[in-house]
Length: 486
Ligand code: B12
Ligand code: SF4
Image (spheres, rainbow, N blue to C red):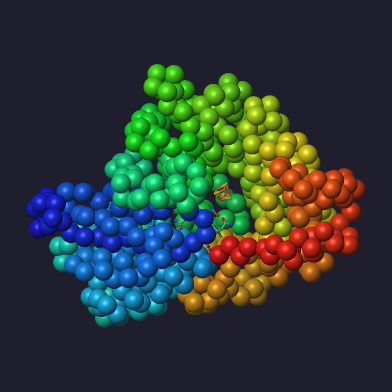
């Protein structure tokens, strides 16, 4: 039977259930939107369930799997694994025959290891649209997944087989993301703002040694054609009247012309139809210095409000080692452009790389301080290096004896987000960095009614790099304990 033979009346469509595990923040589940939208709506009924929205998610999933063809679960490394495991096991208890498919970043890197868990039947590696469509078609037709490219399967005899990779396809080939598959208004409500999440590309051409993207997407990048993207955004704006778009791309500015055309269309349609929204995206510092002023201006005019520019380290030596392929001078030039065009910035840093010297850490703190002083709209969050699976630095660390978690349960406990450092940060360094973060945050934060004196004190401390005896910090932490993020 072919896919066309399967075309059926709406009430007879094959049901596919998609699940997004518990996570921090209310970013829309774009991975589920991507794989769910690409399934032919004439043949499949797609039901998405997001644990962040549904306090009774397990009950809902169990009710929905009745008569379903399979369940697809998106899995990030860390805490979401716990929830994904719990849900997969509950599903298997209720319907042992229902195929459970895991996709996303963790199963992309640990294709086989995830299948050691008996409640998972298939893992998908990398881009998921075509592979998932192939999987559900085969399941619908009762065919084997033995030669289905892009996934790893447990065969009838219990052995695990990794099928050949599927080449990365152009994202323009796929059906447009159907936001009807998710309760958009509910995400707006939970975010507290009418902010649409949108993904316009997949992958990244760069090779940063701490990042798993080069491993998962093989340094390839595919992006939506800008006219199509602009049209799509216009349709979505007409429907949802959002105020802001958060582009979740890894490197939004990979193709300058694409961004320019998009900005031009947004401006044009703004004039013609009153469409108006702001937007935020990611940019590399080396892309910022190459972007002509004219394009900077168009981006701003079309609503660009904030850029995320990964700095990672204030030391050129360390930037070379982690293969960031930028220079700190480029960060400042890009930051100056942002100031000139009135664009806010997030400039994240990572400290605690293996073998990072004290002077390299100090260089990061110095650069963070200089950036913050450039604009009240610049933030410089500092994260601790955590050994992300699949990255080159981790392979190095493992070769030198660092032990990664072994089981899925261990990976689930592996908290990437919490503010604790890896083994490469001494307690003294940790203390210094935490104090630096606290006082710089306090010194530059806007709207601190009733805390003006504290802010003045913090500014004095920052100006003199004096972070000893942090009574203000201890008191604040005692009154408002830090939030655990995952
Ligand atoms: C939004 C986002 C989040 C959201 C997730 C919201 C949610 N849905 O639950 C939140 C804020 C919770 C989050 C958290 C974190 N994130 Co995050 N996040 C992203 C981001 C920016 C976008 C994800 C997205 O929607 N992409 C768009 C979709 C279309 O792409 P995709 O997810 O890759 O999905 C494709 C395939 O993977 C596959 N696929 C995915 N799921 C499934 C499921 C099935 C069944 C199938 C068949 C296929 C499939 O098909 C999709 C279409 O091709 C990505 C970067 C990026 N651009 O992908 C980082 C990214 C995934 N995050 C990352 C990191 C590091 C983190 C954090 C550690 C925090 C941090 N410091 O940023 C935490 C870890 C999670 C935790 N422990 O809580 C890393 C990878 C982490 C990892 N190894 O899992 C990424 C790649 C960023 C990076 N380069 O470092 N994140
Ligand atoms: S850190 Fe950013 S630029 Fe570097 S490889 Fe990862 S996604 Fe690409």
